Length: 243
Ligand code: URA
Image (cartoon, rainbow, N blue to C red):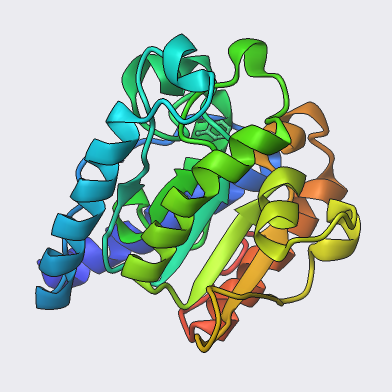
């Protein structure tokens, strides 16, 4: 029975990986839940802390986005995750549901995570901005400045081994640089959580929305190379690309 389940898992992983490379968009067999499910005792304490932040975010009016949003989107996933994915900010679907990466870009992120042999619930997914900028415009510097402490606290609580910054806004904000994403991705950078604290490895890669707009074999290969480096770093198995 267990053996059969493993075989099914491998078959599913190969199918997801193949879809990621060939451009299919449906992720089957995954029911991403909104909860932050602790996988350890430490995770339970982290869950409480993360929930406090989610409550604060829900009441936040530090910038104008607080009054235009439908729902704040604090983030979700494993409170004790080894990998935290950070995007730019909620879009229309995320604003409507209060959950990160549930729209078209989110479906592609699901596929990338599945290609890595993981489930959405194995990682933590959040954004630089917790509220949707109207019309999906770029975040303004004052909005990033007001919102960033929430993300910094989330990272401090979760203590991931690797942060994956999705796109230029996330990478530049977390690395405090103006370099283009093309120069930041592809090798590990370091995120500094604060004075006296150990840096955390950060892998920048293309944002799934960018990938959808520029769905070339080269760009998909680049993202997959970035994710393989994350898996190597964490000594996690790298699912093989199906021939
Ligand atoms: N794009 C983002 O950057 N974050 C989301 O949550 C959804 C789309």
